[in-house]
Image (cartoon, rainbow, N blue to C red; front, side):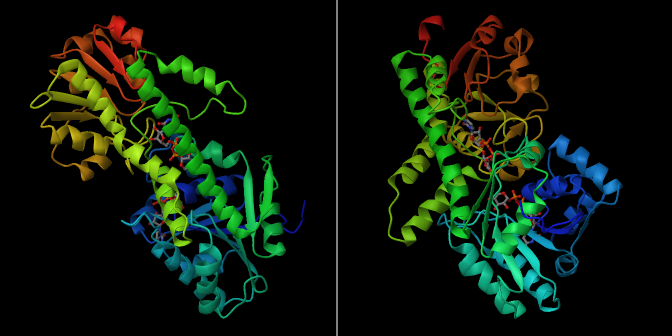
Amino acid sequence: MPKRVQGSMKICIIGAGFVGLATGVTLGKQGHEVVFSDIDPGRVKSVNSGILPFFEPPLEKELKALVRKGKLTATTDSVGAVSASKFVFVCVQTPSLPSGRIDTRPVKSACNSIAKALRASNDYKVVVMKSTVVPSTTDSLVLPIIEKGSGKSAGKDFGLCMNPEFLQEGSALRDSMEPSRIVIGSLDKRSGDMLESLYKKMKSPLLRTDIRSAEMTKYASNTFLATKISYSNEVANMCERFGIDSEPVLKAVGMDPRIGPLFLRPGVGFGGSCLPKDVRALRDRARLDGYNSRLLSTLLAMNDEQPQEAIRLLEKAIGDIGSKRIAVLGLAFKGGVDDVRETRALPLITHLLAKRARVVAFDPMAIPNFIRLMPTIEYASSAAECLKGADGCIVQADWPQFKKIGKREISSMRQRVIIDGRRCLNPAAVRRAGARYLGIGYGLQEKD
Ligand code: UDX
Ligand code: UDX
């Protein structure tokens, strides 16, 4: 293990978003001094008060404690923050452009700040790309911007690493403190060694690679997860038509150690800030080199269509949904978070509205974010209120509290039909509460 990093280090995190805050809190907890830089003054103020700009309670608790101890601060002055630090983590967002390509403008802007700070410094700093970028972005975009703007040479005057994150929302702190693996791609050995020793307190397996391999690892991982989910959806769609419950089938499939049990839950498709965007970005990147990825195109097409499976089940139960009142439970891209980026609730509700259904929606945390995407539908203040007078309900996100829906809520529905779009409810319990249960991949019609 290299021993180049001794004691507490000064660390700058550019981008106080999900990944930046989880990374900064993890390093702060390990005794380092962290400064977040963000262009959004509201976000900076919130972080300095120990308040997270999103819902992730365990992370917020640790953030608060570290801010109170003076270990974490935030600023809008990115150049100053870089100047004062030994390691600079780039954690800005890389959203999809309409073509599927990633928008690298936030990364470029972060690199310009880094270059400005390096120009006025003779200190060897390590720049670490954590933002998800397609292979060759770090060496063909990040590196030249920093070298040109600073007048310094990568590998000599400053170090450059690519260190992808694999954290899931809802368990960001745990995933960041105990990652399944740490991948360090480095341009020069010195910066790779320094980053490796920064992580010396972590027990996770660590892999050293070149920069492009590290970039590709993130895409290869996320597109595989998307494949597993889509495969489960494919099996579930067939099971439902064959009159089979997909749950024991996929459970048995997952017991094969070559396959594994996780990410085999069927539903209305994958959403979130990473999976859909990364599948699109890798497909686009492959095209640039003349490769047409049929697998990635199919994943995207399947994921587009999957919300319609829930609507098909609803129509199977209640017939034409035109002018019917349909309750949608769960607006976040998954249960337990308030994030609505690429949530499947959006295409689901859009299809329901296109069929002239009257939609009433509820989510325990995500309504303030979702209302910006869909200001005109009706929102309920509880699951019970959402179900009142409904002609059917589709569960879109696996919030644990939806399992508690019982006789009282069900009896207030006009037509007692629950479509489980995430296979997160207990079919027998729903039936005992008096509703007809249909779910993605649930084909035991004889019991209904
Ligand atoms: C992360 C990754 O970095 C992204 O590449 C990955 O694919 C998804 O996860 P995330 O942490 O979710 O992105 O981004 P977000 O929560 O949007 O936060 C990014 C932050 O960077 C925002 O607070 C934004 O204000 C800030 N930012 C953006 C800057 O400080 N400077 C910029 O120039 C642009
Ligand atoms: C994902 C990756 O898991 C993580 O490693 C990466 O760093 C960021 O992207 P996250 O966006 O938090 O994390 O969501 P994840 O838990 O992976 O779920 C993504 C979507 O897939 C959600 O819409 C979820 O409901 C869906 N999903 C997940 C399924 O439909 N079935 C499953 O079995 C698992």
